[in-house]
Length: 336
Image (tube, rainbow, N blue to C red; front, side, top):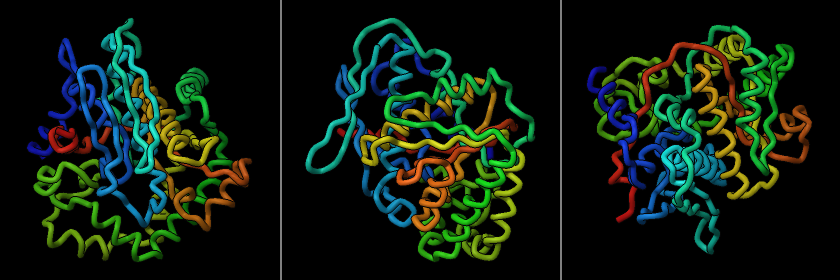
C-alpha cells in the first residue's frame, strides 16, 4: 500500500507556480472516467490542447455507442479548463467534428484567475464507492451543487426525497441484475480489474482494489475469487445499503443525444463533482439503469423525461475518503 499510495500521490501533486499546458493535461487526466479506462489522448501546442478519443480503450459491452467515452472526454475538458482558468489562462473549449471522430480544442488565452476553489478540489476528487453516513445535506449545500451542475444543453435532476430514492433503487437493481446475468459484461468488467497492487502500479489504469476497499490479491487468484464472490443478490444488497446511506441522487440528461451532447454532460457532471469535493461531500456512479437498454426507457419515463436518454446517475452524501485511483504516465497519453 505504501508504493500504491506514493504512485497515486505523484499524479495528484499541486500545480507548479507557473504551470504550462502539460501541467494542465495532468490535471485533466484526474477527471472521472468509466472503469478508469482513461480513453483520451492529448496534443499540445504552446497555446492550445486538443483532447481526442482513444478508441483502443473502449468498453464495447457496457458502452457500445461510446456514450461514456465522450462523457469522460467532457470531464477531462472541464478539469483542463478549470486548471487553466485558475492560473490566468482564460481557457475556452470548442468541439470539433470531422469524418473520423469528435475531439475538443482548448485554447489557452490570458485573463483573470478564476475557479481556484474547484481547481484545488481536482486532486482530491474521487468516486467514493463506500457506504455513506446517511446524514442529509443542507439547503445551502444543495443550492451550491445545483448551481455547479448548471450547463447549457444539460438537465440535472436532483432527487432528495427518500421515497423517490427507494423507487430509483428498483431501476438501479434491475439494471445491475441484467448486467450480472450477461457473461460478456462480467468478462469485460473483469478485464479492467487490477487485482494486485503490483499490476495496478505497472498499468496505471483500471479498477484497483484499494479505491473499492478490496484486498491485494495475486493476479492468478483474483479472477477465481471474483467469480466466486461477485454475485447478483450480494451486489443488489450492497446497492440497497449504499443508496440507503446516501443523501440523494443526481441524474444528468443531455438535450442532444450525440457526442457533443455527451461531452456537455461530462462537463456539467465534473463541475458538480468538484463542487461536492470542495464542500467535503462524496459521490459515486450508479449508472446501471442508463447502461441497460431494457431498463433505460422505463427509468426515463419515471424521471419525467420519456423519449430522452438519461446519461449519468450519481449518488451523493458524506463519508471518509477512500484510497485514490491511479493514472497512466503523461508520456503515454500525450501525442508526440
